[in-house]
Each structure stands twice: as C-alpha cells, then as structure tokens.
Image 1 (cartoon, rainbow, N blue to C red):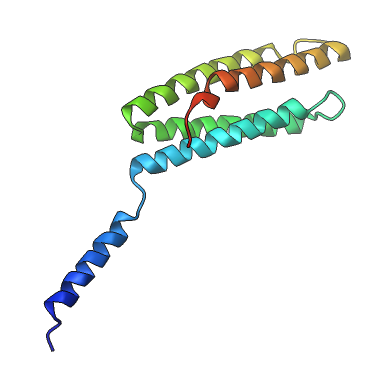
Image 2 (cartoon, rainbow, N blue to C red):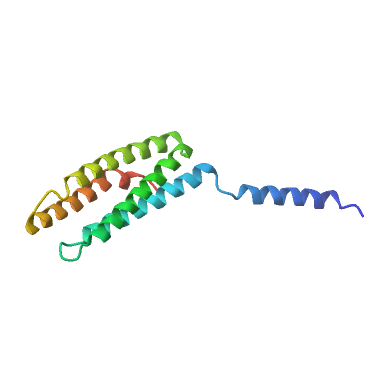
Length: 141
C-alpha cells in the first residue's frame, strides 16, 4: 500500500514543527547567562547575610567559587548572544569581575576582629553594589 500524499505531507509538517520547537543557540546562551546571573545574585545575598560570628572561610570560599563558575559560564555563552546583548553582557562581566578582584584583594589585610568585621561588611556591600551596577541591569525577561 502506498501512503496517501496527505499523510506524507502531514508527517513532514509535523517533523518540521517539532524541529522548530528547539532552542536556538542564542536562546540557550541567554538562558545560561540569566541562570548564572540569578545564581550570582543568590551568592551575593548569601555573602551579605553572613556576619563575623556566622561566617566561615568555607562559606565564603563556596560563594566565591560559585560566582567564579558563573562568570565562566557567562563568558562561554557570550559568543552566541545577539550583538547588543553580547556587548551589554561583556561590559557587565568586565565591570563585575574587576570589582570582585578589587574587593577580594582588599580582604584579609587586618589583624583585629573588629577590623575584620568592618572589612566583611564593607566588602559584601561593595559586592552587592557591583552586582547592581553590572548584572542587575541585564534584561532576563
């Protein structure tokens, strides 16, 4: 038996429709950037919630590692973004990375507990400000 032409055409249309439902490289890159951006925000909030009495070196290191990992994901995805979005993400990444390096470079240069508390408070506030001035401005809607 020969399949009818209508059945063959219906099969072709269905196959094309299913194929069109996949994400484009640009959509995948945007989702990667937005997911990483959301996790950076979460990590910044976690760091802000730490106090000198609740903070452990491990807590801080885990958040910093997560932020670093997210920055790598963002950098890897940038190439598949549209030109405008890529420029925005590149600028945000550069700004945030520079500010994080500056903040991390200033930490741990104290000997007293009260100075450490002040440094932690200032560093987490600077980190939150760096996030607001860079990644928070990226539209993920």
